[in-house]
Length: 327
Image 1 (cartoon, rainbow, N blue to C red):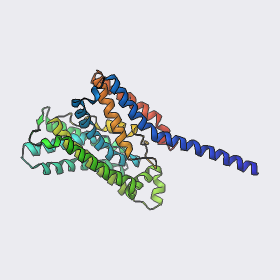
Image 2 (tube, helix red, strand yellow; image 1 turned 180 degrees about the horizontal axis):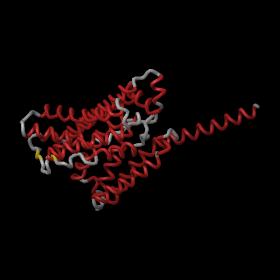
Image 3 (cartoon, rainbow, N blue to C red; image 1 turned 90 degrees about the vertical axis):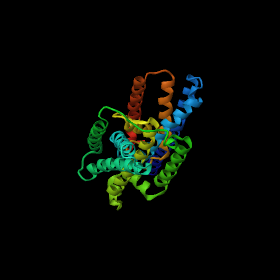
Image 4 (cartoon, helix red, strand yellow; image 1 turned 180 degrees about the vertical axis):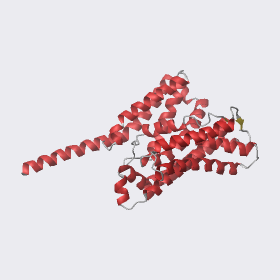
């Protein structure tokens, strides 16, 4: 009997050690991936990756994606997703541009209006799931269609130009750095050191257990979508002034890039206790360097999108067991 007990303990100890090794590798791999991608493109582009002009491009590309990915981390932590953020981002730019150019509204009013649009879209997506029981993916696709139609009608096949000179500070690297650091500091604190972040991870781990523990899961899910909406609204305003125009394609691809960035950073597909906020930042950096480096390397933009698509399939395939709680 004692031999059987000792054998079971030995097996359990071996399993625990294997899980610890897997957890350690899961934490290290995103950082190794970032280093490898950076060094690879630094070499193949013969240093062009870090020249003065491209550094500015990297900062601009990384800023929008990182802001949105940090908001997305809260939604992913409880196992949610949102495929409507590209459309709501474009509509937010449309509303802000019209208020600014047609009605002459001050910048702060345009900012609030943009946040209102993106938060509304996020809340509608969340409500379809929480109130009507519609799967979040399906619900967000429905909201995406609505906002895509609004954006297409609002632009009517033309462009709405926004003066970049008047609000030049919106393209200032220092301003973007301050905003990025502020969002990271607030997001990291909420995600890692408050009951709000712990609840998101608890829901992702086992929602029924979270409900039995007395957690307000529906309220917490809704708040996570609100937070994502705020991040998308902030990113939309900076993206609008960076591009200097709003078109029917504004915001396109943002939801795919956010999902890929979060997964590349090592955040499990269904969240849970192993979800980490820094994963959003690491993933955004990897994807930005990959995107920028492939273009500098001479690849056509359509080929770049194809590479990202294949990468997404590979990451999802490798993380499938994780999404089921098997690490």
